[in-house]
Amino acid sequence: MIIGLTGLYCAGKNHVSLLLERHGLPVLDIDRLGHEIIEAETEKITGHFGKEILDPNGVINRKLLGKIVFGKPEQLAVLESIVHPGVNRLTEEWITGRKLGKISGQETGTCVINAALLHKSSVINKLNVIIVVCAPFYLRFFRALRRDKRPPWELINQLLSQKDFPHYRKTAGRAEKTSKTAENPAQLFFPEADIYTIQNSGFSGSPRMLEKQIEAILEGFHNGKEKIIVDCSFSGSSSGNHI
Image (cartoon, rainbow, N blue to C red; front, side):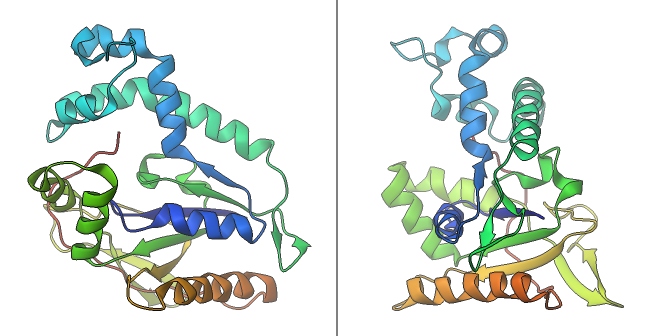
């Protein structure tokens, strides 16, 4: 079984990733792979975007690169055409050679793919389950402010730039996808996978509540219970990028 883990900017998916690892599941962080490929493809990237994006040590400044492609689909497409093939290759290699995961102490053959832009991964049609980490807008903003130390207006623009997650409803035993408008397609399209959401509210006692949600999902896998498809929606308009 391949589990996809995703969530909007600063929703807490990396924390959920750590909790899944504690439960014995191997996790691949695709975002980190992207950083590795950006470094490996420095020559190609600077050939298009210029050497001004290099820091004094000759390493690509990812924040500066992110600003260059933010809100510019053509520039983002160029960057993705350089980065994504390498990321997809390493992802497929990792899945092929992964170690078996364990749920409740038993070997399961399950692994987790952690990616902000999960819908752009080559494994999207191989996923059996999707876990979407949800958090309120205000909480994601303050997390980003504390973690990334960027100007508030930049963070708000990035938070608002991300597209909606799709609205899912269960019909005749399967999930059907809808989006709010034809002009604003959903960010994620999962043709076969069952969808779960984890609410990361940030309120008192939420760490234990988060753990309980994960335990409930994993217990369902272990016991072979029917998987649950639930709704998760966010506000936003245009596409965002994660560099």
